[in-house]
Each structure stands twice: as C-alpha cells, then as structure tokens.
Length: 102
Image 1 (cartoon, one colour):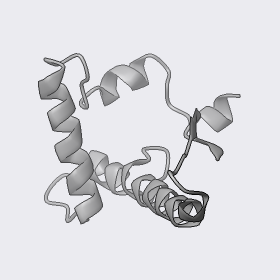
Image 2 (cartoon, one colour):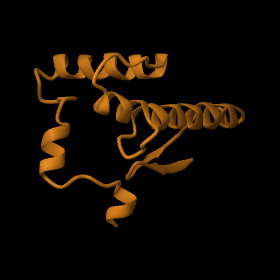
Image 3 (tube, one colour):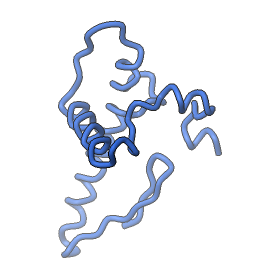
Image 4 (spheres, one colour):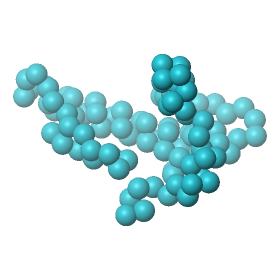
C-alpha cells in the first residue's frame, strides 16, 4: 500500500496479506496522533500550544514520545538533526503547510 502524508510518500508492507488491514489501521492511527500532537500548522496541535506557551503546558504521551525521539535523533546525529529550528524555518519562509505551498 502506498500513501502520502505531510508532503512525503511512503509504502506499507506486511509479511502476509491478511495482516495489511491491521497494519493500515495502526499506520493511520499513529499518523493522526502525530498530526494532532506535532503539526505546527494546526492551531489546535500540542506543538502549537507549546510554541505559544508562556508557562507550563500539559502534553500527551504521544507528544512525550515525539520529544524523546527528537532529542535522541539530535544526540545520535551529533546535532545534525535539530528539533529546535523553528525560528530558522520561519526566517526562511517555511510558514505554511506543503499542501498550501503547492
């Protein structure tokens, strides 16, 4: 099964055809959960609330997992993968979703 999300394309494969419906369900579940938590182009996402916060913000387990993974990626790449680049992205004009940019 091929899919696109967030301007990226991917494919999902299972060992057995009978496993594909469950795998598709899990894929869509996690894409949706990450979208609600981590999509900076959604005003209602957790990352948008975190970026706008002036104090403590309660976050979901999904957001905690995403932040831990981002931190780990930064460590493993010795900073080449940097989850703290929002000001730089905005300065470069990346302020809209890929779908809006065309």
